[in-house]
View 1 (cartoon, rainbow, N blue to C red):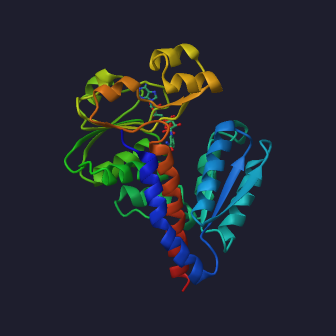
View 2: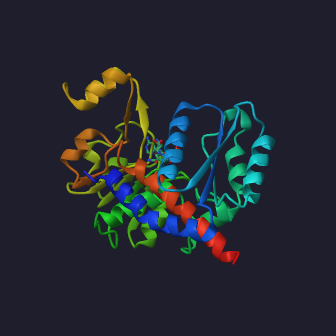
View 3: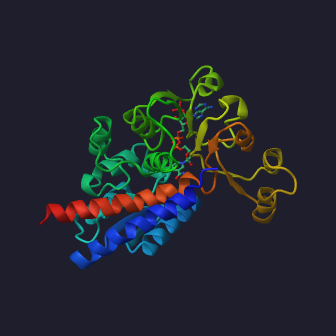
Length: 307
Ligand code: NDP
């Protein structure tokens, strides 16, 4: 098991000195503005974890809440205010946005965030820079995947990597980052034919699908490195019983809470893979650590540019 939580703790520890130095020189900590629209329960948890992690690492983090009934105009007003705020170096608009804001709302909002404060790496300028291999701020989850591979001593150069998922948030940027590190990358999606066979050719398999336990042992080349990005809340007792043996901790957790977070990778993959990230405790904590790293990077860059 690749212990993402331990690696994330280490990264956060390493950031502390830089955060302290920034705070001393600037007379204020690096600042992150988080915008949350509506009351999506998963988003509430993600935002709470981000605020807590930022506080623990000495950053300032402020939450701007808008009701689910807010208009796109209201949301853009908040983004504009944060763009102009001298104490906020990073801006994060938590997705998903309420469907009532319209299909293109997320892109409109990500486009409106100041690219120098775009700690999620979703602004087209930052995406373009990543494509051209001169990245500035890169999406946190893909960065977390790369950091985990690097710190776990997993060779990427020359490796055959298969990524399942082509989203702007995970699949596409992680594929680019792997390619820039000289992996030979295949990107798969819902229309891919012969998915298990393609995946079984991978030295490194990244699953970013959003389907619980979708990747089964027949997808895996023995000894391969498997990175499970998926976060799926399961409430189906039958599925939990099929995935986890009687008497296991996971079953007990499910019985206590009535739900369980599982990844895109089936637990039986652990018997075939050479290395595997757990869910929870894998890529999730690294995503938060990279958000803090991006905020500090944006803060340092803004302050050195204004000197
Ligand atoms: P999206 O829904 O945006 O993308 C899912 C991708 O999976 C799409 O490209 C889709 O293909 C592909 N896919 C869906 N079904 C299949 C299938 N049957 N076979 C092959 N490919 C399929 O999801 P995200 O990228 O935003 O997130 C993916 C997962 O990662 C989710 O579980 C999410 O919760 C999790 N996540 C975790 C984070 C973390 O911090 N650990 C951060 C962000 C996301 P197509 O394009 O053809 O529709």
